[in-house]
Length: 162
Ligand code: COA
Image: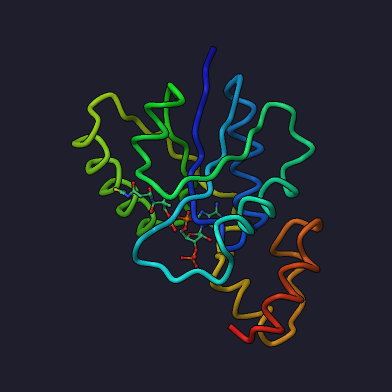
């Protein structure tokens, strides 16, 4: 059985993330999507909110399980016994960042491995930051995030103004 792990901040989960999850789920038996924390980021949504929105966005996929962790990526990778991590890359700079992260993770756990999926062209300019910027001004984010979470993201960010 092949299992893959797709980790990210998902603050919030976007259509770009969903496309990577959908494609990754086709090349394995089980895909774990893990909402995690990047210590360099300040989040607009709590870990629980990010998990809940990610779950709703992926509810139609039978072989995808959404989990959350505020620990190290290698620890859940090891605990779940996954074959590899999956990450989406949008650009050359994403590739460099992924190569650095993979090297660090391999130092922590030599059996760690990662597979990179190039993003779809039409989704390559979406990022969680852009979604937050547009939503905070009351703009239409319906083409950026899965339909199931458009309202929640819009209401929350417009109210908070962040
Ligand atoms: N489509 C659209 N956007 C995408 C995307 C895709 N396919 N893939 C990534 N992005 C965007 C995200 O929206 C996000 O945008 P933002 O910077 O505006 O928020 C950005 O690219 C990268 O975010 P994400 O993919 O969620 O990763 P991250 O860099 O925030 O987090 C973790 C990466 C959580 C996996 C990493 O920090 C981690 O492993 N944390 C656990 C602690 C740990 O083990 N640290 C050591 C790591 S060496």
